Image (tube, rainbow, N blue to C red; front, side, top):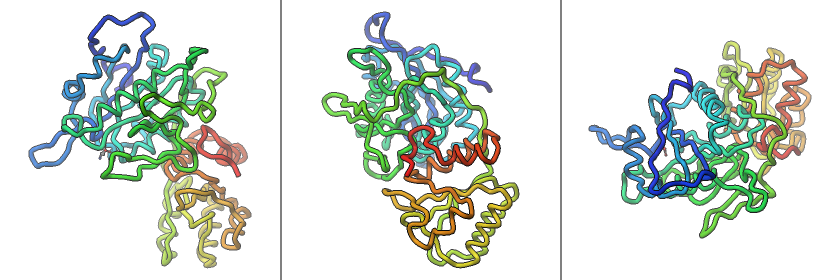
Length: 361
Ligand code: ASP
């Protein structure tokens, strides 16, 4: 299956649209937004045509909307790096034909998918706005219609005077807030405000009007879109906790062919000083495993060497993740290692801000 194989379905509009009406592509991947109960009483993804019928207000928008659905809509817990590569190709395939893209996606892994897409779509000059819902579109108290309609408005937004694209970024619009995709974290499974922006303020808020924080939004790129086509998937996350045993660390870092690992450390990047831990990390580095130090704290940053407990990390070649989220870090490892660059270039890219995912310290 290639992106060209998926049929495009233009959605009907209530009234005739002017020629300059924004052309937006809705990419339906699944998630609660489009789910219904199966016979066993569990939520499963449905096809989008059933979903569209639940949201009549969509058809009133002064926009030319087209829908494309993944062949098999999924619960986002099933998402894989291959899905991200496919989504990036799909957006690349339709890039010239649309002014913006709205990706309907489950909330569970939306922050990972948005992070991955932010790296894969280099020099992005059009909005790619992820959204979804906490309650299926068919339920009376669903947040689906509100999230989707405003996500479409964000994707269609232009600067009032210049007329240029307002949000040339991968973002997540959810519960009235637009967040940079690679700064997002799912923080709620019960309330409507499912996402939070970590270490970076929101890009826009939706009240009576859409209020964009233009100064925080990335500038239009000076080069054409480049869609990357590879991700390194032999990567891992190792979370520290008091009592973590040597055998566990060695099991993770000893995975055959492992290329990179996010170390989820304490506070400003600290770890136990046990000699076996330093030895295991040093051995992994010698085998060429890239280690990215990311804090378990939701706010703040990694400062290696601030405490004696992380003083040896830099000398071992462990890279401080600055203020990055785990979601953005693991996908950054996949992306950068997927580029197949030499040691120096790989290190430099892992330390750099690539798409607004960090403010380097
Ligand atoms: N399990 C669902 C998913 O991520 C949750 C949601 O969409 O809110 O697909």
